[in-house]
Length: 302
Image (cartoon, rainbow, N blue to C red):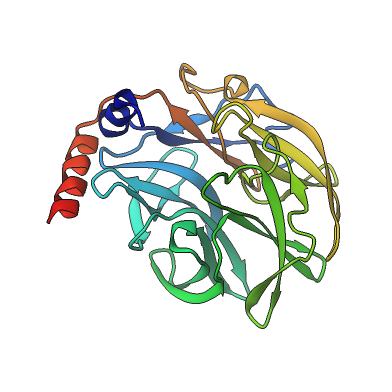
């Protein structure tokens, strides 16, 4: 690593934020509306946010996300309540010894679960909510493997986990399928079912649009967070996975209520008439990053 890269990681590391929009029509989304602007949500001094997901509970809308703690230099899981006119404070709900992100949240049989990205721990596990929205506990290890950005997709009675196995060299170029058996994930024999650095790694939940099942995926061909691709799932079975690219969206194509000086985008989610994305910010100095660097150094030494 060069000296400039080290200095950047300490003084001007990569940061993200989220942006939201409320549509008048539930049928509208980023695929057919590139004019209605998103509103950027301001982060706190300590945390920046990414990988946003939406969920409704008791007629209230909650935004769950990775909250990157500048002091601890790692991602934790957090949430904030949102309305069309207001955004609540960032609240941390769960943290581990290592980095967490991509809190795929879903409801099943009256219970709420989160499958976070926990690849640095070498396992994929599920959290269960014991008191919504802020009390969660580790309920089950789904598989002992390093997977990123896992999405649970229900197709009729079938449940598929669309994910990506990682190694030290790459975590952007493959799609891997799993199914659940006795509470644990079983890998499909034909994994990876797809290889393409331009259109593989997950970027959000599968959603329906105009009768199609749409899988958002990251385009990381040139840079991390370059674009989001939107793919129609044509076939998914225990043996096959086929999809076709409908379109892609770069950060420059995203309408915002403020000036668009952002440099990347890599998550998209939709709930009814609400859409949420994340945006990569230009690198800039933040005092909390410097404090966090000293805290990390102190822990290594002592």
